[in-house]
Figure (cartoon, rainbow, N blue to C red):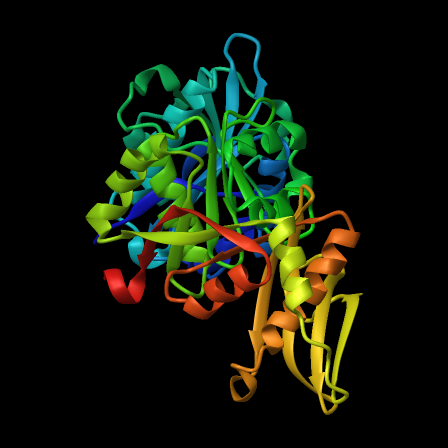
Length: 443
């Protein structure tokens, strides 16, 4: 059995539903006539002790207050987690609350809970805490588990936590007993929307080193296109990884630790995508050894992206060569929202109609920082008649009127796209390399 461990994110809270929390409780520790003793109850609990909804709410509250959670995964399934609230309390010691720890029924007694506990203890210690405070359930199995870990009765009792459930046993664990038993988990912050990030300008500055692909990543940074961001620090980020739903991803800032970048790319981004493919761009050659060390062992490889720079003079020449439109041809350029696209705003679209039927479309779905990425699609039955050229020229004119700099890029096998770029006013530039991993090609 191979179990992977990594930090959980607030967006993953509902995944605790993947855990089977059912358990059989034979005996519990209770006070009877002022005497503590084991009481046999033989109870089968099919759900989380306080119900799924309450445990879900508690986990969300952990994240809202700056705590953390570590998950254990069998493949892509969450089979256990441990959450820690980092709000400190206590008079003699800096206590933090180990709030929840659960292992799916069929995975118990494999050391998974023990590892989650010690990994969480190590991370809490690194955050400055001195002791875990634990409101342990009173079942025999639960108390035996904590006793085996070295937990003891709490020296200081948190009255509020005690009164939540007087049947719980108040325990503590000295975090000084945890000395780098495990490598620190990769720690970073994830924002599902760029607008959620508190220091947008600082994140945006990290991408200033890029000379190409500007409208693609900048469309996300400017909030015009769907995308997510990973950063090392909320207040003063020094690196970032930008994730896009089209499968393009961009690294920026200082070089990232290999373990962290591997975790983001292959555990986070890839596992969340339906299409198991990664295309990763970097701002400079300095990144290549790092990316090679991650992709090459997985049989990933470099693919060149053909880049083109817009030239006004070439564009004017293309306009001069443009033939007069036949009477049965009409080009309409509008700004509208396209269903099924990842754009958040209306986009410029040029459509060429032949006898009333749309046969060619040119769009600029990604715009940002004053740049616009162009894409053209012509119906196969009508290719080779110059319709794509006419449609592209019309859209470029509208983009220029709207103060955008048109941009064009294509994969090497898109020969027609590369030829079209030159026809409508673009000049080829040096290729930009991307690292590619595809499940079908690299497995």
